[in-house]
Length: 79
Figure (cartoon, rainbow, N blue to C red):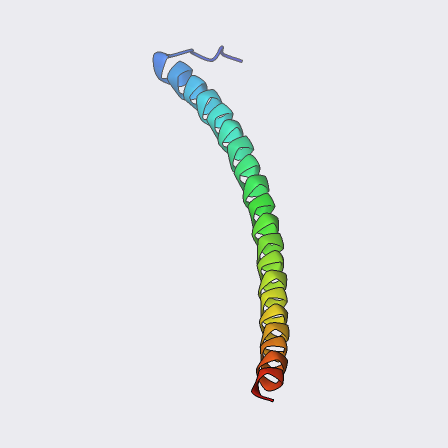
């Protein structure tokens, strides 16, 4: 069986394949980190939405109670 001839082209192709696979591994790690951080941000945004909704509800209750108190004082001042 004859020996394989090692040429410059085969060396370049081999090293290029190694470089591409290591680059793809690095990119895959970066993408997984980005996906995890995006999921964390989504959770934070949902929590903020819930807090804002609760705040809006509290403000509306306070406005309602304030109008009732103002109506009672207005009725008592008329007499």
